[in-house]
Length: 240
Image (cartoon, rainbow, N blue to C red; front, side, top):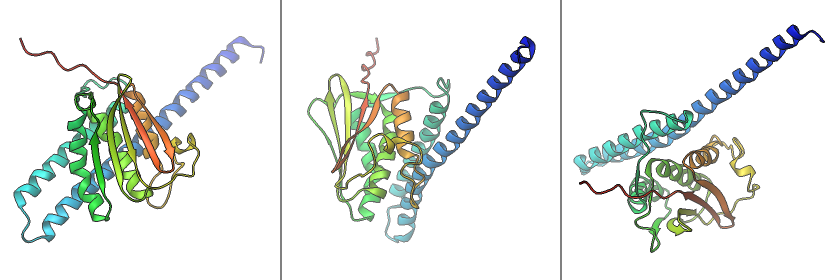
């Protein structure tokens, strides 16, 4: 307009609109991320309780113990989504555990779900990977996404393998299916939307990996293999 004051008002307004647009997009992503992860955790919890209720000979104490473990995982899911939404969420500490312990917990949660579909789920840790300490809550959430994706869209047996690779922890999740999408498009929000899914899981998993200083990639398309790279932390010092 050649009038400095008017141009300054226009620039200020444009900046405000851009910030509001980014904020609204951030809020939409937070809502979809939370609903995706909570839906997966709640489905597992309901499956376990339904199975115990339908079996008159079920061990109720074991069923309650499993339900409590899933509820704790549900709380951790909320914490992780909050931590992703806020770069520094003071109430959510970043914890680390040996990779073997992490995958064992994931196996306990998902074994029944895959067995109910008549599919095999195998977990393994290669030599040198047992004591790798990884961000456990982040790894659990990403593995939940990858296993849910393999259950919905993959085929055959699913295998999760932990290995050491150049000072980092590598977790491979493979199944016997094939993927036709482009390697980059598969991580775009909504790229894999179907009647059985929302199409945000892999996007969320990659965002969680990057927020933890790691990376999630599609290593192979046939058979499908996703590789999660996570930084390794040092074990806590022994008490004095």
